[in-house]
Image (cartoon, rainbow, N blue to C red; front, side, top):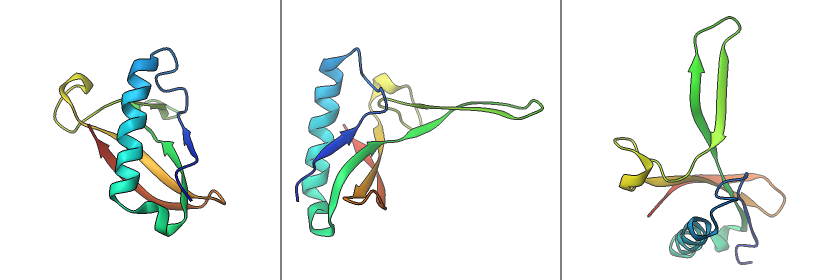
Length: 99
């Protein structure tokens, strides 16, 4: 089965141009990696740690993030973190999808 769904978690909801670019990259990654052969049908853009405050109780905030990288701001390139799931919703793998 081809990739049937991308779960955006509100990412780029108000920026359709960015969502189109991200979708094209996710679909190309899916095809290049041959994920269809493993029954993968869903791509879920991951939430990543955004803030962690050392308070009592510990406050941690996760949010969907756009292009991000280990060494620079999102504008400089980087990747999306995407969880690939099977049709039943079970986790298959998590990949960094690069620009």
